Image 1: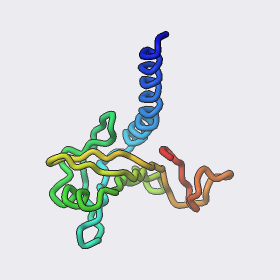
Image 2: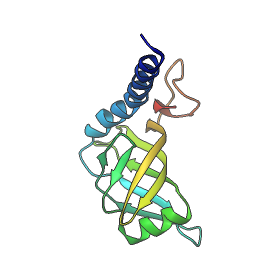
Image 3: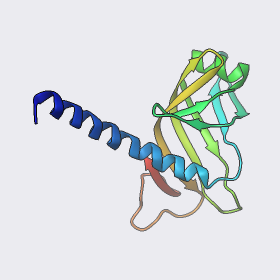
Length: 139
C-alpha cells in the first residue's frame, strides 16, 4: 500500500470513528416522541427557548428553521443546547451541548457533549460526574 493510499485509508477510518458517536446520538434522539427545545442566550444575556425540528448531517445536527431569535442569539453566543424532554414521567431527558454555526436562515450544531439525564441517585458505580442518574452519550 502506497503512502497516499495509507493516508486515504487512515482518513476514512478517522471519519468513521468520528461518525459513530453522532450515529449513537441520532439513535437516542429517535427514541424521543417530540421535537427538542433549542436553548440560546440573547444579546442581553437572557435565556431563550424555542421548539425546533432537527435533521442530521456529517457535521452535526441540522436545524433548518431556528427562528429569528435562535439565529441571532447563536451568532452572538454560539454555545447552545438542545433538550429533548422525557417521553414519560420519570424517564430520561436528552441534553446536547454544542457549537452553532448559523448559515443564512438555518444552523448546524456540532455536538460537544450529550447525556441522558434524569433525577435520581447515580448508578453504582456512577457513569458520569453528575449527581443524578446520567448516561453519557458523547464525552
